[in-house]
Image (cartoon, rainbow, N blue to C red; front, side, top):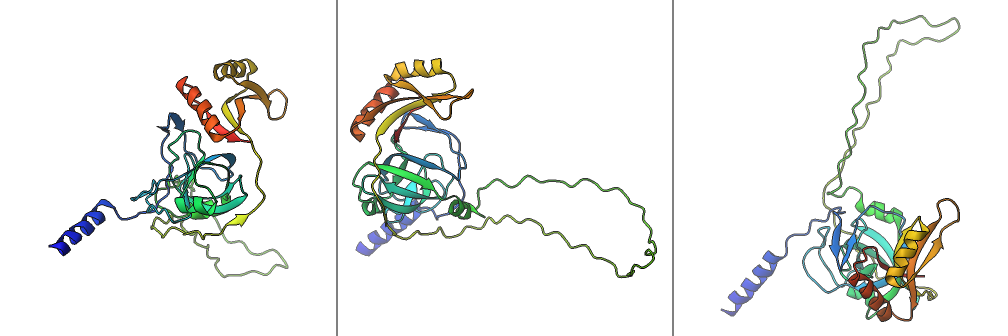
Length: 284
């Protein structure tokens, strides 16, 4: 009876977890944690903000891989999946290469969530100031050939009309040939869609110098100063010129800096309660 019960448990667990089917995934815009996210393909990301720790969960990720709390993996709100990033804990200078294969973090004001094992190697037990840098070449290689990508648009060649031709004798002094020249057939482009085993990144920690950045609440960027000032008044912040001066001068709205993550979270919560749509916590 005992063995029958254990067997039923094993069968139940197997039935609940579908087989992994790693694929390319982007997805539609979605709302989570009070903020909208707009996924897009990107290969040059470099941002600093607050990182979270992923919950230890089972099942499949957004792109069909198995969740594994011990792997060097992460979740991001907008990057194509999978992607390869380097995450640095700015508080101690420790860095890790991680494979992004999940959507998240669910909490507003977080730029990435790392697996529990990755967090331990980065010396983090809770939210931490982090820099996220995308490896463009590795990320392109990670998605190459994966199922789920849009098929390339067919391009039809222009019709070729009938061409009348005749063989002419070679000019004086030239060497003629009677050998026919065969056209080299053009290889057809083949898009691979077979699933492959996801790359398991090593636990390779790189130690660097800690980064000293302050935490800010950003509430949008504008090309008009009056619109930026109106937005700044709503959150109790200020409008600052951003980027090179000129006819296309931008203005960013932000408040802070805040002395701690908790203080920044409180400011973010107040802005969310006022219905502000374009908010993020940044480290600079």
